[in-house]
Length: 159
Picture 1 (cartoon, rainbow, N blue to C red):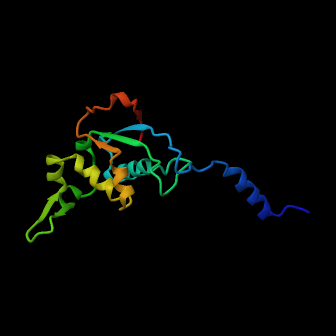
Picture 2: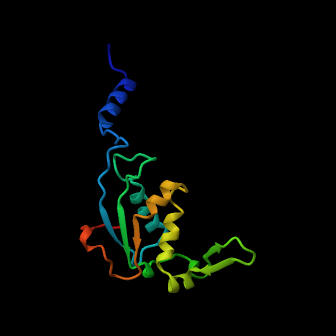
Picture 3: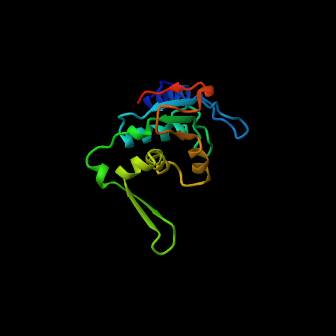
């Protein structure tokens, strides 16, 4: 019986998908990555960070498991923004009480808490569940060059 085009593609897919998913008892290998945010655009940087935190760059990615890696970001104060976002981008916080709305633009947030710019951006790209809260704890953001994670043997990631 001659092989049709469809059976050839099915056989090819079986060969490619030989990576076995992890079970709940197995723990995936966790790596530590260092990212320098100097002159990187916020959105592009954040999508790359979210991908690594979720573990979507790994073969053994499972949506309901925390299979991602740790990420350390330095120079968060020097992250770039495009267009007129420096004056127009607003960050809102509401306490739940009347008159409890706090509004800050990107320029003032960069001066007061530059780490919050990247944290806020990445948190919006993660799941809004218990898993998302667990994943965001693997992100460490520092406004300057120094960080206390030398013992983790960080791999530098180019973006």
